[in-house]
Image (cartoon, rainbow, N blue to C red; front, side):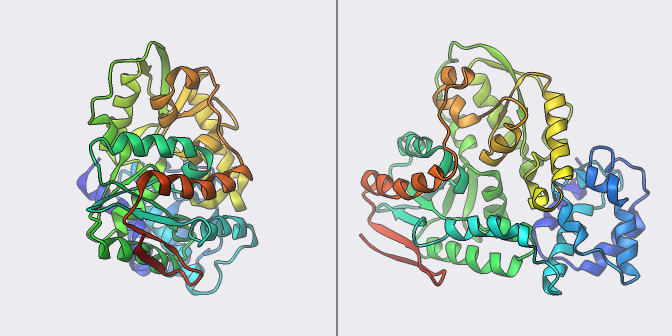
Length: 392
């Protein structure tokens, strides 16, 4: 991938000049059809050039872009180095600014985000001398709370003062164009941790990674997969098999993460056979951009592509949301299940919680972590959204 394209991909995560985006896409798109080849949204609605030209004439389809997965594949395959994904993301923000970005079908997703950052489920635990925290994310904490505890014990062998933070990164709001809200809520999280000396964060969720990468201020973010791959992870487990890997679309350009995950898979004695769409050209699982809320037929297309490309092989991925969505169609396992329990994972005997049990797991996890960490400083979100820290 060219350096210029890598830079344009980052624009999707930040504020942009929408008129410049319209002009750039309208003037740069040659309608070659590469972006449209795998994307049902573009197949149904036309080329990015058409969206941009309509917008320049004063008729932008601001509500229609909420059916886009914001996966970035269009940008990744564009031979002109333009960034349609950035334009679609900015059109969502413009829709919100104009009061056109509210949809009843987004309520449950936004409620999920709100509960993740509530006084009931949020928790901050910082031991004495803590400068690094583990940020598991929402889905993993609910579906696999035991993995969170196992990871904490594993990581603290080399990071004795490791802290843990249970909170929501607000990626749903960010994807839905509610960037002002996201900036305030996530900014409060960053402020609280920086004020107490945190300088590094380890994440499990790819979406959390992008939020910390783009808005984490002076805090450095790294995935725990990179950390685990850099440790002595022992010899291969005796369960040889052939698998394939689904790279979440939010980290399609983070080759260091792709490599770390494949190293972890190889360490368990498995052989990876890549699918046609992987790495920078990976496809969405169907959850991206909350497109499935409004246009399930477009989101489902990604799952069909994945099932076809997997061709009966087990898919290993490193996003709990991807496991859930793709698992409706084919056999999918989370890399952390494979890391800790390879034999049970390959035998499909790993227990994964589903709602409403996930909510209870997230609540109980707070107490379990507090007993293990014995933190010097604890905190949580208040009903007003502020993070309040105090000595324990």
